[in-house]
Image (cartoon, rainbow, N blue to C red; front, side, top):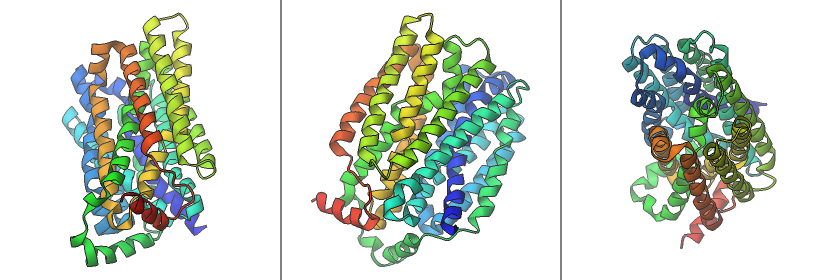
Length: 410
């Protein structure tokens, strides 16, 4: 029961991750009207949280080492609260952007520390389930964000859309005072005191590259373009009102939750590699069908876009959603885990920021169809990378994995 409570509280970091990054998808429609935003300013409003996440991810490893896994999450929870309050009372775009940047810092920290903590408290045979509960919480956060967007769509009240996030952030902060620190952090403190000066992280560069490239591919195959801009995609596909576009997006959020729940059941049974391979194949299929539908402008484009996005979301949630976070929490030795995960997470958020910032320009350059076709081609490259480089980690202790992968480096 105590371990279940620890999982529940730590996963609230994932909820904050999902809610705060995706809530902009519907709120942006109303924020743009209220502040009379240009297309460039809309892009900044959507992506500023990612700059905060970049900073949070880059410092997350050091914070996890110095403050512990729990201490780092407490700091992130405070940033979620402060950011939400700042946004709620913002009177201009600058104050809004500051609040989103603060929230982003918290997101960057929890995106690496929460999976790390869950991996370290988990028994080997259930580690996939433990770590992936964080990704399930992310999808629930996304779904709730879509639901809140729909509830406030008629009022066009973006302040309450963001303000709702304060409640789970407070629960998260309070709950962190009642769960234990991971034993790995205590061992890590001893390692750093005795051998940190002699540690050379570059010795593990092959493992670093696996984590970094897997994290980047998770983003540049288009997932957060779908998450952030789904209502805009649906409007471009023929949905007549903002409300109907947001309602269609809600179904994407629900599919994300359902498929991630299914992944929790499979991940320790089937293994990491088979799920990743199946996931990326169906993601590529979904992207190509979306591209075809947008290009042909056929009369069933609304149905086709909806079905294709559902396939894409389900495929992502089964594999490319949870498994990269799981693998980067598994493959690194304790002595470099914090810093290595920080690098991989930083790469993830850098790719995320690049995608969000360039999507609208890419659409203007290549057309919506061309943009999704490009993401599909990137997915094919990701498939070859997974087949060639990503190891199977199912059912092995973190210590055993460290020894096996270290041997394979030589």
